[in-house]
Length: 165
Image 1 (cartoon, rainbow, N blue to C red):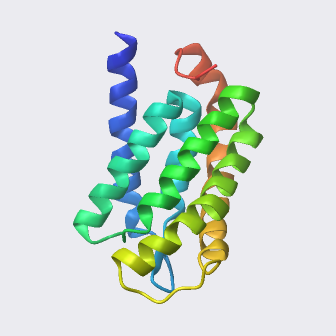
Image 2 (cartoon, rainbow, N blue to C red):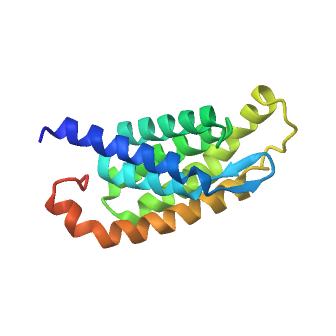
Image 3 (cartoon, rainbow, N blue to C red):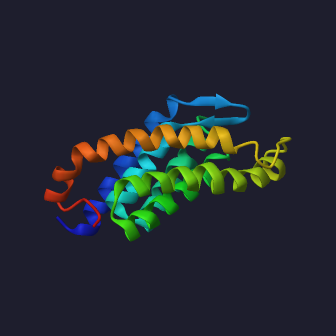
């Protein structure tokens, strides 16, 4: 199978998983924290690389917002987390740093980027650091699950040429 077709198929499956898993969310204030999205971010980062990881995060966030299962806050959190997880994995080739990249990317960078989205686009009152704890908790849960899944699947993924290293 063509490598690009395989990556596109995996990306589509990951978007579908994130959208289907959006029903499992933790409401924290005006945010709907979805650990499944963060699981998908790490899977995409490791299996597909930075560009696809960002595209998967964007597509899943857009569909979730259009379906009403997510808010505009899904964009900064998931995109920053997926991008940083993919960059860290590309440099380190290790799962744990990739998972930590997801938590830092979503929990700190994405949470700080969510502030102007909440205030300017959603017309909500928010504290600058008000999203850090909920985003970090949600991304940590998803990253822990992703670490376990990827450790269990590592041999299979390498054998099939899907593991991005």
